[in-house]
Length: 266
Image (cartoon, rainbow, N blue to C red):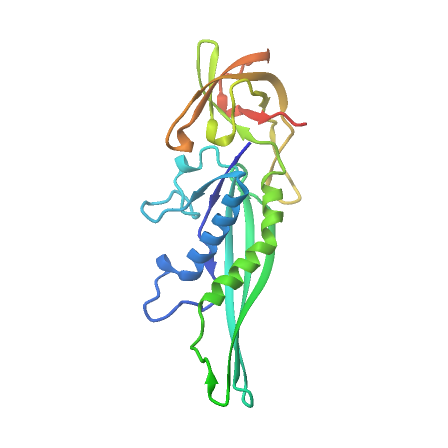
């Protein structure tokens, strides 16, 4: 089952790309880091990815509207820093350019707002130009090695990120009921098929943790199983629906926000 993951823009913690015409909305390191992470997660084939757009007024600090986060499990936020150095050997006229990048990644659970995972990775890339007796190539600083360094840093983290994103069972929600059928969020693009069976779980109570001051959700209770009988496709994954019927147990709860649809845990 494919998870829905929202990727917020990275923050730029260095002066890289912050020239006289710099604007935060078009920060090169922020966009580069986001694009590289999106590409690597997309290559895994395990996620439906939502990227922040700059074309609307967001409802939260991550840059998303509430309706865009429907069914989203995690938001990925991060920061990046990039530095460079040039080593030059006078005798051989060798010039090596080295870029070093550090990327910090945090996964935030959309439902609880808690940071569930954080890690830092570093990478570097280099290029060398050499002349001998006036013969050879010389070049100004090659900015492409910054991209390569950031890509190397994210590559060191990507396996852990994917494992963390897929640790818990896939979840969805009941949106409405019509007679004996229920409409749940999600469809074909998330891997749902006709005949799939999911658990219906009633959320556990929330209690305050006196140690941290935060709220903790107690384990839920499985009350039923539902089977998928029809898929309602849409060009937009967020609008896909599946029609289900109860195949075991019963659903007496009418406040659907108290219920969670979960992938069967093997």
